[in-house]
Image (cartoon, rainbow, N blue to C red):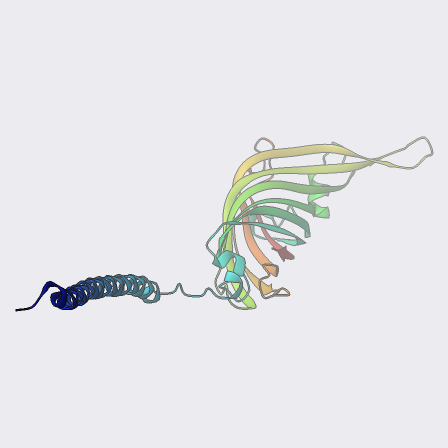
Amino acid sequence: MLSLGSSLPVRRLVLAGAAVVLSAAMAQAQNGSYSNSTHDDAVSSLDSSSNSYSSSTDFNFTDSAEPAAPASPAGGHGGQYDNRSARGGRHYAFETGGGFNAPIGNDTPYITWGGNFTIGGGLRFSPWLSLLGEYQFIDDKLPGAFIASANPAGGGNGSGGNTKINSLSVDPVIDIFPKSSNSIYATGGVGWYHKSTNFTVAECCDFYGYPVVVNAASFSSNQLGTNLGLGYYHRLGGVYGDGTMKLFAEARYLWVNTPKVGETNGLGRTELIPVTFGVRW
């Protein structure tokens, strides 16, 4: 039987072994918990990264799939010459010109050849259609035979005379070949016409003894009239191909329902062919 003295080393050995076993068990439990936490964190981080990547991928895919807007032509112009009109907007249009007049029909015995001046402005709706308001002044002489027979002063001493027509009209202009540098156009319209016929006589004399020419008689009327004509364009392209300036030559038939001979303030229906050269832009 062991004594108390001999049993003390054995007791210490047992206690030391138990402490070692308990320490190992605690260390194992801690290692298992850390491993599980690390695994869970890694899985959570992987899921989050995958979701973030998927979201980013979706956004990029939407951007890349959206169709790009087609590039517009340089300068946004569409025509070879009248490019500004090709964009569809209205633009101002202007003209000025001059020429001569040829009497025809009923006016032949009462008017000779003369000159005209035209100025106008309006809107250009498209390369082929413009609407112009025009002022025209016509100045023609009276034939000598008509002056002599009219006897304006009552004494047969008529020396000259003229017919002047001032008009305001509204006239559309249709360009048949708006993309060509050379084109044909049609025009015509209606308006107000003031015609005055004036006879002059030479009276003797002024302070220095020279004959004085004065108006012996005058007839005038205000009537509606119409015109219709054709013209030729030569288009100027401009520095960048966007010019709207055109040189033109045209002939129109002009008809004004002025009173007949013997009626109040008139010498008969007016028929003329004004021929005009000018520029439009």
